[in-house]
Length: 629
Image (tube, rainbow, N blue to C red; front, side, top):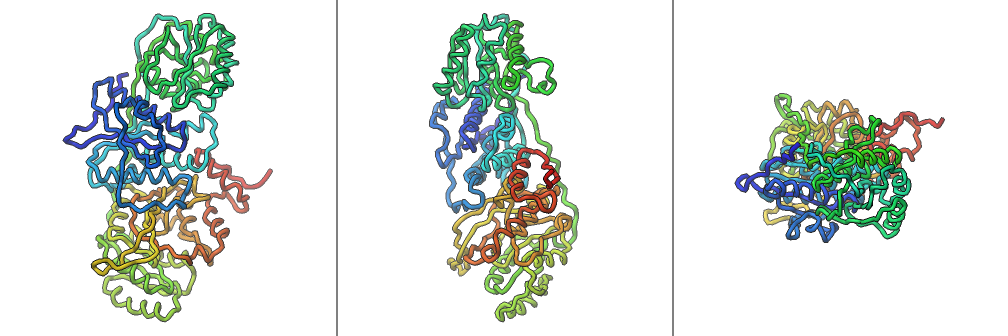
């Protein structure tokens, strides 16, 4: 199988970049660098032009020896984006650095003449770019190619690593990036030429970080029936070298079969082997695939999978050492005895399925803005002015007054009746019932395909409705949230417009259910929702004095099959106040509501929340019973 990498664009079409960024952990960074090196080396072997390597690493977290790891003659360029507000860190502190880097990368690609972005799935840095492309938000076409290693989730699952919340966030980001890429590149192996050399050296390539302690080597080597021909046992792992204790353990085990021992720290350059060498991959999954590709590029034969295990058939040349050393020893013995073929490094090219979305025809407005207010006439006027300034005209407004009693608020509502009637907009006055009930009242009166919920203290940016509607129609999403820019006060600009003074940008992830029990990464209530989805979910809860109705609604929608995405742009200004509904309500009751959709039935212990979120992150189906046996 030839490598057959897709061509990179010419300068006339725009330039290609290889985009790298830190991941959630150092071992994932090591694997990311290895995947990038294999890709670049494949281009070099074919005599092809290389993409420019660009780093999104404002913290300087990647290793200083990155140029050597990638085989570059100079340090990669670091991207820089000016004029953006700092990101609000409290949305999801564990994952916020990765979210920030993904946002910066999207904004940098917007500003550059880029036609192709190549990235590795292990960092999540292409997450927001992938969403923006899917939603048709970029002014020029960009192809997103993802080097698919299987991802951190697959790596952690095969190595039995228990994830933290940063890693759960990464699982979502890398999955969405891979799902929405234009092209996937998966390291693979092709049929090579046979060799008649008898291996005298074993090279263990350590793909499983959980097995680097080498506790298995003492059990494996003595079981080799062909041990007498092994003169040297070698070890190599991507990234950090083995510790002195690990090296001592390996040397002791090799000495028991009369072999010497060597250790390599190569990140891609072929070491000098002093004799015929058989490569053995220690581990499974994407990391094992990378190391098999590396061994093939060095011209090394690989030990075949042990026979008789159907569940390992898809693993090809990978010997599974940790669970079955007897079978692994047998597989290595067979490779030591039989004539071997040296595989060639190759790439499988895939295209994720993305059916085109055809919007259903509809006469009249497409969006109903469900605006709610309560005793805040000044803020309400700012919100309405921002809707009057929209670039789209495909919307109507239903304003629900949730029982305002202040004289100035009532007077403001009276003054709005005539201009609202002139535009075909409506005002509904009702008794105070809290936010959920007010929003549901507006939604019940709407007849448009989409609902856009907005509170009176927020200010829409001029393209809010246009961008929401375009993204929904392009992507087919059922629920779209977005970023927002936080502010505390407005000041008049040179034209007299009261401009919000932005302090932070709030980023969200969309449907990251694994993080939702503790962090609202789903989005703000100022969101676009397909009306049929809203009705199917049942709307917002109407419990008086309890908030988080948006958090609960988004999680319920996602768990019942609706596609929830975040539109990666700040489409409105979010007002921050010392007194708000979240500060005057009981947080415990709010949190119970927001996490209620994660419960299979009534009365489940609160401690199940985290366990169920972790199970969801790994793709397990949570158990449905909540009763103890």
